[in-house]
Length: 207
Image (cartoon, rainbow, N blue to C red; front, side, top):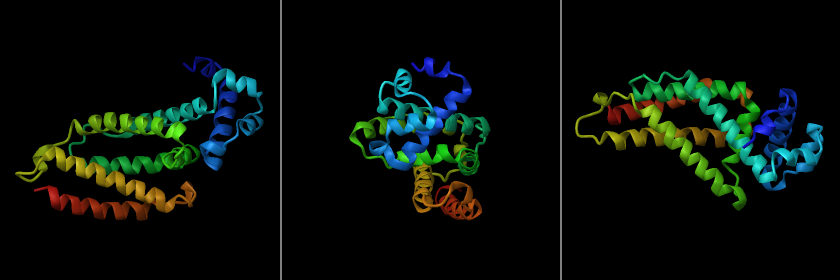
């Protein structure tokens, strides 16, 4: 669908992506200006709309593109065969912190996208998030050693609670630290707090 864009030389692709990311992240979807994007990218508006027919398509392309980069990086670095669910999700958090440092602009864009309330894109974003979470959860849960759980516990529900709890912890920390530049976050404090929650969850569900 975007083969024309990806046929551009790398330098021009990056100019367009960087300009659009900066504009959307600073002004949100509704207030972002394609005039400003093309100005910063050094291209004509006609050329931008040659690759993306409107602002909505450009925004969703960016979101899909960054989400794919993040998911691919995550699964390239995670040990999918790790049998302990807590070790696995702790590793996911550490990988996310490294990705945040590696791609701060990308993470800022995705983080702000979660707060978008424009009806024009909100439903599209929610569907994408639901699909990615579902497929990622399935891949991550396949190798979990369920023998570690207490007798009589509904393991699937327990795993859901663990997943939801640690995801909610991540979202809460995103909200609390969104005014702090990603490269200035104190990841050690966040990890220490997360480990405290993990120990509480272990007491609740493990033998």
